[in-house]
Image (tube, rainbow, N blue to C red; front, side, top):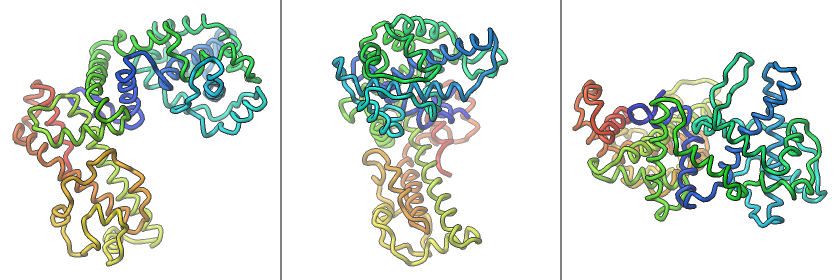
Amino acid sequence: MEFLLGDGWVGAEEVGKASDFLLNVASNLVDSGFHRFRAGGQYMSLLPWAIWEFYQNELKLGNGSTEFNYERLVAVFARLKFVILAATSMAPEWGESNDAHGALGSVLYSKQIHEFLEKSGLTLPSASGGDVYGTYVMPCRSFGLLQDAQGSNGAPVGFGPRSSQLHSIREELPGSDSVRLLLLEGGTLTAEMLRSVGRHFSLNGLKNEHAECSLLINSMFEPYPGGPTVVGSYGRFNATVRWVAGFIRETGHHASSIIASNFKRVIQSPSASLTEVELAWMEHELRRRIHYACELLLGDVTGTLSHFMAGNINAIVQFWLKDKGLSPIVREALGMEVIDPTITLSELLDRIQAGAFLEGPLNVSNGRNQAAGGNQALYGLALLLSTYRSTEGLRAAASRIWPEPQAISATRKSSSAVSGLGALRRSAIK
């Protein structure tokens, strides 16, 4: 399903991790003056390299042909994940930070890292490596570092010119062969080995590899061959980077702060002053809030039903509306101490404060921490109603532009921001 404006800013399957990754990449690029990457950049470099080496090794073992084996690839990723953590933990020895923020496996392998540092060596783990692939394969494909697989051997991804360039750069880094063999075959990683090659694998070391860093940055801003779809995607990413630059000094560079600040700014601004990228990320947050509110409502239905063992929606709602105490956070969200069972949605909407849920990023744990039996559902309802109320002005502007839904297709080619208002109208709460 296409998401947001026109040809789509983000596919529905990319919402969540991908959007946070995109904004964090963009904001870190702007904030650092394009001179450094941290976790994301290092993983985006190492993932294609590791897959390349794995494919080559599999072909060698199969005398030129092989069937793809995901379990063996995951084992390689698990070892790579540990190597990155171990190299980062030793980074002060060669003058770099050991900040492991954003590292995969830092909790999972915390005991093993402690043991590695204590004993100056450890047998590499070979389990739980799937998150390396799952987290970074889509960003790598988006920037042409990986491509669709060719052939019928079941391999999930293939390589293009950028993959080849990246592999050539890493192949020339001193000591990469020793780590490559460990990743493919397993074995013991030693502190002595990392003292010579660790700077090429630590999270904070990418800034020192000029050719590698330049290739990654160029990959993010120069489209790879792929037609209008690729060119459009790059245009949207570049627009997002420029847009993020306006938030850096105001909100910091955390994706959640940027998204929340933009959401508030857009719904409080005249529609004529809005840009395409502002509307796009506002709609991302609008849809996320609606999704989260519905998730809380459904979660409370399930939780309440587990106590009844059997029942219908009417019985569950009546149970929620019984005269009982609301949790403090639900009382604040609804603007009332108790729920009147006879209250209508319209009356409840009137009680929602205009600025509810607009001060800072949405804290999803506030709702999920509410007990089933009414409080969780009512918190979700408060979020749903506040989202409806806060976007009334923007949706009214969309209605004035397109009084009838069928008029949207006829004027599709109008300005991007105006098209965005049409998309926003279609995603409004009914």
